[in-house]
Every structure is written in C-alpha cells, then in structure tokens.
Length: 66
Image 1 (cartoon, helix red, strand yellow):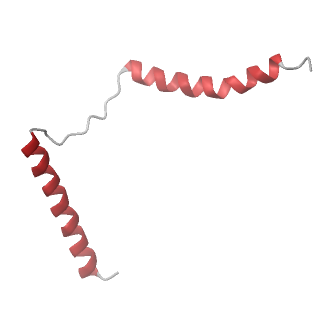
Image 2 (cartoon, helix red, strand yellow; image 1 turned 45 degrees about the vertical axis):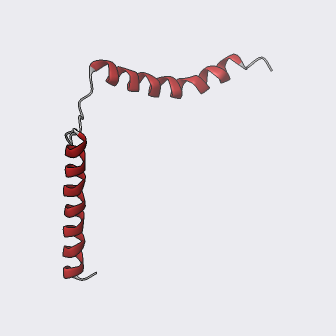
C-alpha cells in the first residue's frame, strides 16, 4: 500500500467520524464513551469468572460414586 493511498484512507476515516459526530449532534446526542466501572461491576465480572471455573470441579467431586 502506497503512502498516498494510506493517507487518503486515513482522511476518509476522519471524514466518516466527523459525519458520525454531526449525525449524533443532529439527533441530540453527544459522542462519548464511559469506561469507568463501579465496585459492583468489577465484583460481578470477577465472581462470574470464578464461578465458571469452579463449577466443573464440583460436578466431578459429587460424581465419584459411579
């Protein structure tokens, strides 16, 4: 890919982003991304990961009679 072709694709991407911002503003929204997690969100994700890893172990422990 040549430099001029890459530069035009970057310019096209910037134009699309600007168009998206304009469209959101027209609809009454502001373009933003909230990346903060509360303590509850963090606990929920951590708990679901731990439980999904521990659940197969409990099946094998209780199924030793067969």
